[in-house]
Length: 514
Image (cartoon, rainbow, N blue to C red; front, side, top):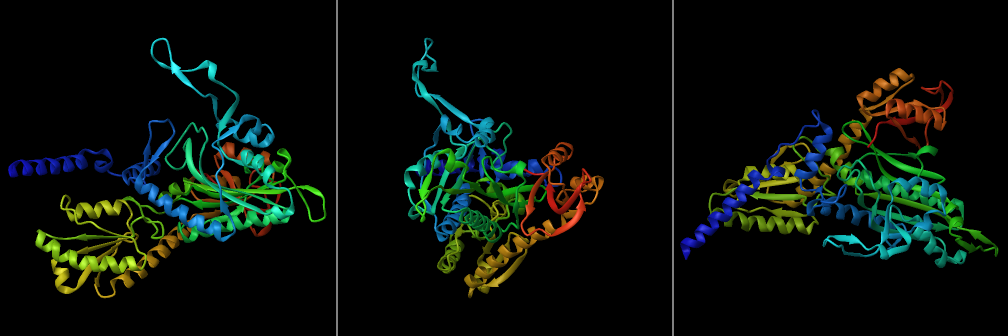
């Protein structure tokens, strides 16, 4: 019996080793950013266990490690929303098609991406195959939610009667479907997760204030939690959200010099209120249409997190978003050594947890310490602590930080305090590095030739534009660059449009983008 148990244990160990040696996500080396940035990104998302492609075309499976990061994003943002007076609700996934026809510019903006439900039942065909039951056709086709303005504003009509019902500050955490033809994990998928805020106000001024307030919330989250510097600005008329009077955005720069829109906040005016007849009785006793906003961020932020900070060895996660902030790896040769190490580590873990630090103790004997080091480097764990028998004798541990790969020997005494300060340093350093990259890759161009050369280098190009959609579209067609935003509080200066030569009063940010 004992021999059989030993044989089974050896078989299980062999299967574990074989699995890691033959699993493509474990054995395949990452592409480098310099050689193929796009492939590097795809490799890293999969190999670091963030997500993978699913059996449904254009959709993804967010794996537990990736979802843990998204949960931390969600928790932080949710608190920020509630701290600014918002509450959560949930609205249907399906939207009657007739709702979309009520706001013309809105339906035009989403028509090409809509998935439509036409039937509600399946049945067995003559040859035993499963077919759509032609007798189960819906009286009205349903759109699978690409965004929720229409269903929400139809609902608000029954919630708002008087100025006493305003402002209405609602947020929804949900999934949406936009039928993208060319997809990339997190950055662009047919289905993705997001939050969408939808608010109603008595005046235009209040609605604009709300729009700007939520833009500031997004910018604060991006810089203090994601550690990604962003530029706040407004979109051009051509780039506005479908149905909005103004779209505000935060724009970030990735390590390949491309821009990524990291969040948007929209002033919708009274468009949706008029489309769905949402009125309120004002203090003066008059019936007026309410003023609206909407705002949202999505799992696209996961892609931004990867592309803004990571390196050729794997993820680099800001401590505020790392599911595991500290990993402890014991160095041992036998069970006796491991037992002695574990006694000390248990105390360290308790002290770290008392400071709110998430920690993992990897005492597996199925993998060598070097393998574990590589694994946690790949997954972007901010701090790694190694401890062996000699460390026990000296009362020390080896501490390695992921962002700079620097190692140092620290006394076990007050280790939790030192690690807490180190995590703060790492968070600050990651942000500073991203900011330095953006500043050294932001240029000014005063001619079209200079503009095109700078675009090829990658980065933000500040250039004059004559303010017309015609010129904007010509530049996009010729260079694949778009106006990312008109920065808020932009410096006013006289100049000439780089393309048309017409007068301009300010520079705007151009870039190629995701």
